[in-house]
Amino acid sequence: MSSRKHRGHENMENLCPVTRKRATSKNLAVGVGTVLCATKSSHYEHTSSPSALTFEALEEMGVGMLDSEESSSSAMSAIALVVSTSANIDDNSNETTPHANVARMSHLQPQRLSVSSTAETTLDSSGSNTTIVDDVQQKLQALAQAKRSALSSECSSNSNSPSKRTRNPLAAVLCNNQCDSAAPLNMQPSTSRQALRQHKKPTAAPTPHLVPNSLVGKDSFFVYRTAAMSAHINSGINYFDKLSDEILLDIFKWLPKKTLLRMATVSRRFNRCSRDETLWTRLDLGLRTLCPAALEQIVRRGVLVLRLAQANIQEPAFTPLVSEFKSRLLYLDLSMTSISRMSLRTLISQCRQLKKLSLENAELNDEICAEIAKNKFLEALNLTMASGLTARSVRLMMESLTNLSSLNISWTDLSADAVTALVTHISPNVIRLNVAGCRRVLFDSHVRSLQTRCPQLLELDLSDCNSLTPAAIEAIMQFQMLEYLSVSRCYLIPPASFVELKEMSSLTYLDIFGMLSDGAMEALEQQMPKMGINKFIHSSVSRPTVGSRRTSIWGLRTRD
Image 1: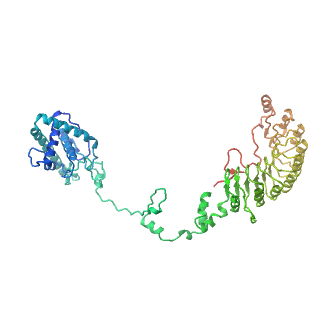
Image 2: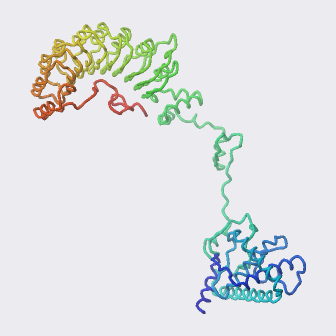
Image 3: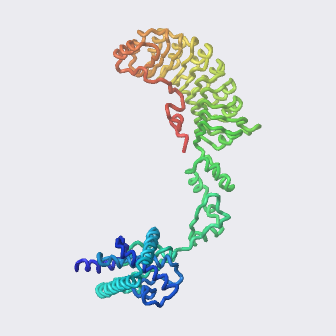
């Protein structure tokens, strides 16, 4: 028993709430009801009655939080809490008191009221109010005496104990919404260092500068500005004027293209800087719809790498009576682009430095081909599935484009004269050539002429040229540097002719789709183990994008 009391004195310093046992005795319930009834009568009718539990007695025992303006429900809750504590003092001698800012236990109020109502009913039947009240007063006085003795003993042993304060431990039991709104809830023990630090005055924080409601947009936000920041903003000095154009351009180069367009509306200087050629070196507008005259503005920005694959260019793409200007375009991808012949001719006419051009599935004519031929530095040209090519236009382009190294003119519905002009006037510098789809117009003689004109070919695609015979294989074997050959669906060439190709030391890949059965294919692979057969379904000659790469053309990035 002594050890339990000793632990009770030690826990007295830690004033945090603990779970209290609910009284189960019937006599205790009667006593609670009696105290509540006596409290009501003493507060409103005869406060000087010696047999009632008065507020002065509660103040003496430490319950000093109730005043004359509080509701009767607050008084009942506080007294019920004291009575429950006194009822358990014999069983739990180390019971502690709640902290000053403990949360309100409003969910227990109906239970307290029910106890009170039950007690009143019992009092009416028994009629022993005076005896029970005297017993409760004696227990409350014993509890107060125990509290005072515990606090006095701790005051002499612990100099940092909160018992030095004038506040009683039970002086702030909060109930029934009688809580000070200015005091926050503190769930820390009153003797901890954090509780002691909370009594210190907080340091003054800088007053924030609030933006007026008239300046706040639709989305609610909060702008925190110190006094120095507000003075800096309200000084009226335009600090951007102190920055050079080089610094602005170095900042603008990290912005997306949409943001650059918005920056152009800020001021005249920003408009001029946002149009600088160094900010528009590459642009990707694939799958977009361009408004009228938008293409002209793009070209005038000085774009070097432009991707317009599958874009829809509305008319007019260029303003009427457009002044002459020189485009800086070097790489232009117009694959599957919806554009009129007039706009395409105007665009190509402004380009004289093109290195790689793709006009896949475009509608051409002799005038457009003449503008293409004026790009003397053109290295790669993709005309796959283009329409409108004639023998005259093919001859003009082959004679003018002397630096051409890669040409894809497959599935363009060329005539026999156009094929003859192609193999006769093609540049000797061509190392990659795709003439697939020339059905019934490309013959063995054309292959021999091609071998004479371009002996340095590395890639040759003759797919779907149905007029080729085994004589074409003999001409192909004359190429000394050929690495890739495709003769898919050339049905006049017998399978035995393909075995002769193993004599070509430079040939690495061979595509013969639709020519051999599975058994013949296995036999051919055994005879040519070092050669890759049917490895590429689609040709990549001169095409800007291969596979799933859609953010680059010819190996160059189109997005920042």
